[in-house]
Image (tube, rainbow, N blue to C red; front, side, top):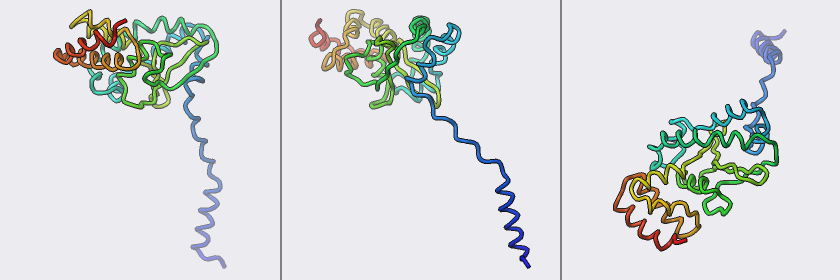
Length: 212
């Protein structure tokens, strides 16, 4: 005769066997290339809505960028809004999408992409993309299962520098790897922090290092 304990165990085993199977795990987030491939060539409303969703909200901005840039969210949001219509147009046609890591010193970066690198931590896993071999002038960052983007930071940085010294701000339009780029980073940081002494010193160096 089966003991009550064994009977109870047998019932639990049968109940477990009758349960519905566990749901499959969610699919992995789309790669940037796959995501943009599904977006390019869609209708204008879809493209407009998706591009608008790339904007980093304040909380995401604060946990993404380095401390120096955290107070620039409002400036970034305005620059992003200005850049968005052109991005919607660029994505109107389908074509080959290529992506790559966003590295400082990459000679194929646009000025905007190069300057956005300054706002991100070292080795941050951001990405850039091209459609039919032409850059989308943004830098993509992953936010959970979504893609967000930095756009227009070069204009934000230049405006901050121009408010102190327009002639010095012109040096920021030269994206040249090496010492010129390094001193440009100092100009940008000093302008954002309103450190006029450091700014003036960096501008003096840029006059020689960034001569066209």
